[in-house]
Length: 454
Image (cartoon, rainbow, N blue to C red; front, side, top):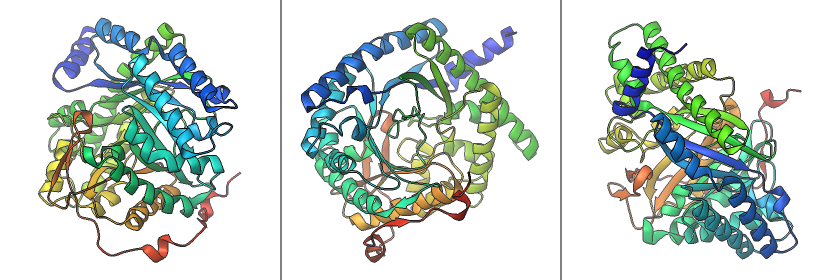
């Protein structure tokens, strides 16, 4: 039974502590849209997206109004387009035409982002995969709402270093293609290892081939709620600290479960998963770095940060699993620099470096996220950063990602404004020593020994 105290507590979380449902994401299978020509493929894609997700934005707004729960984003994820376009696309330009159709469909149904302009190449690249990857810079330069991802490795298959090398070049070309907007295209491009099939968060969302024809996934966030809860147990033992985080995560997840079930009922689309992720925003009081400070580290990046983040991530997952039988995606704590005011301040004062961020990704939900670096950073260095992060994911059997932005014309000490939820970021220093000889090797890094389980 829900009592009045729980209702009052939830209202306070929403009004004063930045609790929100970060996104309702409708996943849509587009494999049946494959056709002989690009024109026919584009037509089928647009028709299916509009038919299935046409009422998503309206429904989300109705639920938000009725229950008083902010629903920040309405999004769509689709089957990796390298699969859908394989039968009709013969050039990168053909894929760009599909990207433009996806963008038109996203605008028509009123969603913030559409993810799935993607390729899964963890073991090798098909001709279609390579064409899509080559098209990414132009596709992201010419669209507003399309997000792109490429999965380059997994614990099962190892790391496709040919794809890693190519993605370093693609990130650099995307930065150049959108240099007039502070290389904004790179903010919509992520390189993954162990990508989950059911991720509602951009830019890495796509509709996995293991999913049903359409699905509702909900992403919930609440860094401000967790920070507020921890303020009441300052100086307490680790046991009390962990219990407080778990109980708070449980309550946040229950809000997401309510919204997900209601959206599923109204749209007639099956409910998939709740992704409970402490995903920050640039708003004051909505910061994972502030939670780490409340736990006891002076600034994010100080000694003890990785241990504090590991504890936070684990307790968030434990609380979420108790609240819903279908917790999935990337549940845990996100550490995007540009989207977290506390992380921005830590980077600006020198407490947080790229190397420390890499260490933190060993225990957080994803990886190096929304980090601005000098625009003259070589493509091989970007590939090296991707390879390092993929290795962390592969060996530790977790999802890792790189969403890094080499801002053309900017250098260390400059600031970049991306706007909205993407926030702003200081340009961070990158190790000046190179890895060209390593990245130029061909082939795959083999899967680790513990991957061989049947």
